[in-house]
Image 1 (tube, rainbow, N blue to C red):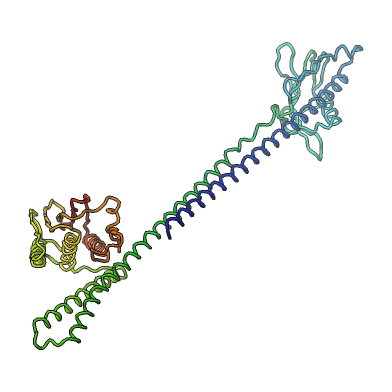
Image 2 (image 1 turned 90 degrees about the horizontal axis):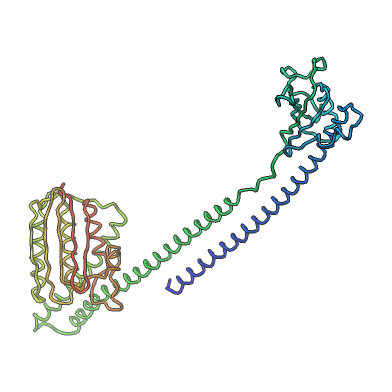
Length: 447
């Protein structure tokens, strides 16, 4: 997948998120508008119903007052007698002796005539002390219209009740009638919360998808680079072997045994090199398929380092260079797999030689503390860029060199080194400066 395709995916993903955001914002706006319109309509209906209820309650209470009043000048006595304290609470002034049972019957009949159909609480007050002297709750039911809540209650109204009081006023409260207008619905938070959660999920999905695409792109590039390197690494020894074999078959070397021996040696070395390359790939593939089993035994790492130095000195005789040792570790005998740790040291030395544009000089240093043994390998090579440091231990990864194949390998060496060190319970770190060199530091547990 090329960069243009990834950019297209990113642009389409962003446009999709913006489209979803726009649709959701439009939906929430319409929902809020519809909600506000519904609330306004409900408020108007409630206000109108409350107004109609107040008018009917006034008429019913005025009719009750007319029936209570026995004086001749009724209109004068009724003016201002009915007062509305709250939308659901009324007060009625009277100047006559008023029996509770009689008042209750009047209220029931007039409220029923006006179709109020509401529970109500009435109370008779002493106008001098402004204290209630009698009260009761009347429940409304569809079957039996009005009835006392509890016939066994102490405040039960009876027509046999003795009553010799006058100069009172009475009040009526409708407890089930709202005394305030409807509250505005406070549910605007939920659509916004839904929008935030949806966008968050879409964003996470987009980031995850983009991350997978980028990883696949990098994996594709690494595999392509691996195939190119492997083709080059295998093609070179095959070509050398083929050329040498062709010369051996075409020419007569009976009188020149030294030349015959030299071509045979070339074929042997190139075949060995080809065998090693194939073996390295197969070994790593085997490590991926199976759990690595280490054969640990007590071994001196200093001895392994000295053997590696000796091999280096022999192989680098023509090219020059050298290894400087600073073996300061007091405890260098560890329980390790000798073969694998030897391969780790050789891999680091091999990299130090391959990635050096001048004569290679390598410093190997060891030290220890109470828990760990440390081994560092410092070279004077070309170094590694910061952006490549975090990926050099990935399988098949090689620092990009364009179309040049002057450095041989499959990108498996450092992957193998990290795998073996971690299987020993250790860790590996790398520090590098481009143009100055690189330092690999291994940390292995003493126990």
